[in-house]
Image 1: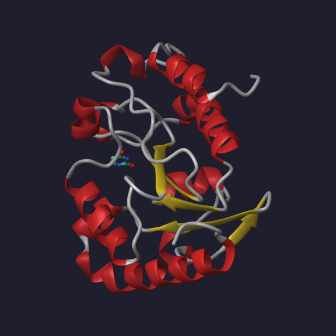
Image 2: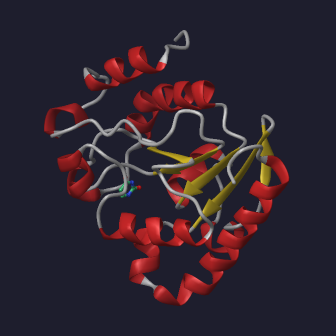
Image 3: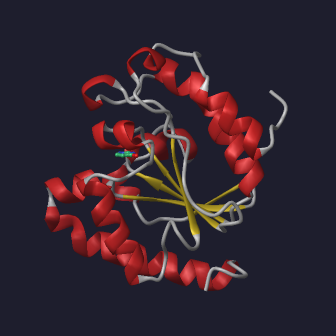
Length: 191
Ligand code: URA
């Protein structure tokens, strides 16, 4: 697929019927944030609140994510772009199937091509396995940095995992501080 501009791409997503997730969706969750952001976050797929509101990470996990990001002066209003692997909600919040990821990944690639981020942060195992490497182990490899096609890429624990197991928060905080350092090294205008 040729690279579409933002408007064409959003339009294509809104009317997408590439997989069965389109049948049950309330809203397509395209992505949010400034389109010149140097840092991109990639989650798994919309949950119930996201499906209802059409925006990624707006439930309890999203609130935690926003609070964590604020510590290092990042926000979706100001300087980061947030999107998901799949743009429509998988039923009962199950993991998106490989076939659903395959049907949707072109939209994400197009978003990356338009944004040209310096840094990509995968949120959780599913995004990390697709974007960093298929055998990615989130418990062992979160916070490590990989250079993928000239883009610095890492994975954080998914906010929902931090809500389930708050004992992981100190590690998540260390990952956040490492992101701050990486931003200072490679970004031009994020601060
Ligand atoms: N979980 C995700 O991975 N993405 C969202 O947008 C919401 C919850």
